[in-house]
Image: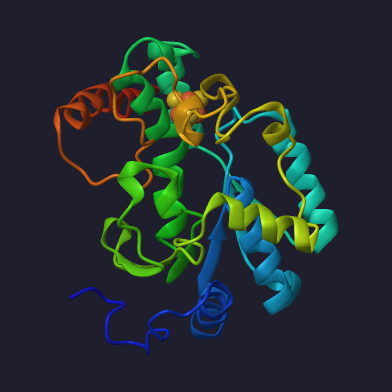
Length: 260
Ligand code: SF4
C-alpha cells in the first residue's frame, strides 16, 4: 500500500474538474503543484485553479531548453494575467552536458532510443526530481489524446513517482470541451494551435498536422512505428526501454569528469 492511501477522503465518484481541483487544493495546499507544458488543457487547469485559490497556486513547467519561443512568450502572458509564479524546472546541467557531448545536440533524429534518452535527460528525470518534493501533482492528460491514455483516472495513486497523488481533472474532457471553456473564460491559448499544431512539445520534435490527423501525430513524426509516448507517463519495461538504459549508462557515469 502506498504512503498516500488511507491518509484522506477521496473526492466523490463522478466529481467534476473544479471539485477535483478544489479537493486537491484543500487536501494538499502547497504540497500540490500543477505541471504544465502550456497546451490547452494545462492552460484551462491554471485558469480554474487560479479562480479557486488565487495566485498562490504552485505551477511548474519542465524547461527542456528546446521549447518553442512561442511557449516562452505564452508563459510570460500567464504570469502577467494571473499574477502567478511559473517555476521553470531545467535538466541537470551535468547530465545534459554529458549527453550533448557524447551524442550531439540533435541526437533525437538518429534512433528512437536516442530520442528517448533525450526525453529522459531533459524531461523525465527533471520531472521525477520535482515530484519527489510533492504530495500531489496535477496533469493535463486526457483520455481522448492518445490510444495509450484511454485508462487515465481523474484521481489516482502515482506508483511511478513514489506513491504521490496524481490528479487529471480534465481526464474525461474532449478537446472540444477544453476549447469551449478557454473561449468562454478568455484563457490564453498557445499560438501554434492556429498554425495547425495539434500537440505542442519541443520545437525540433513537433510539427503541424494535416486535417484529420490525430493530435499527437505531429510529435516525433519521423518515428512512424515507434512508441511515441515521451516516457513521462510510461510504465517501465520492453526492449526500447533497455536500449535507452544502455545509452543512459554511458551518459550518467560520463558526467563525473564534468563535475566541479
Ligand atoms: S521532445 Fe525532442 S528535444 Fe524534447 S526532450 Fe524529447 S527528444 Fe529531446
